[in-house]
Image (cartoon, rainbow, N blue to C red; front, top):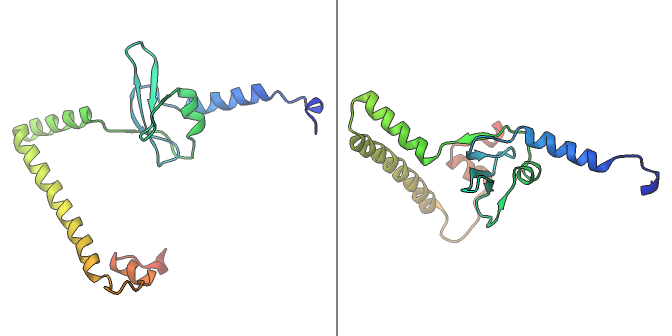
Length: 153
């Protein structure tokens, strides 16, 4: 079909597609997991009032339209917690428990340190169990080390 034979209004179709994609984009500044489920964007208002959409690892900022049409998927936008939200939650939790914020932070730090140490020990154990001669380990054996049964997948 040649361009002259087409009565399709491609510009309108593209504008409608952009409008549909941007309808679900966030309107409240924050950090969001994008609809692809893997990418994140930091949406904020600049001092001049313009929207800025920053994607980690990319130097330039984007507009609502470019983010919404370029980063699509089946997942809904998901607002992530910012450091300000985390600080407010820590203050709220400390007040609810009647604990000084410093004490609660020490407790949370100890939990995080224990989880990190356990993960590092798991990694060290796997490295110790790796054959020294560089021989490859069958996938089923490797999966079993992590407690995964490939037959159940």
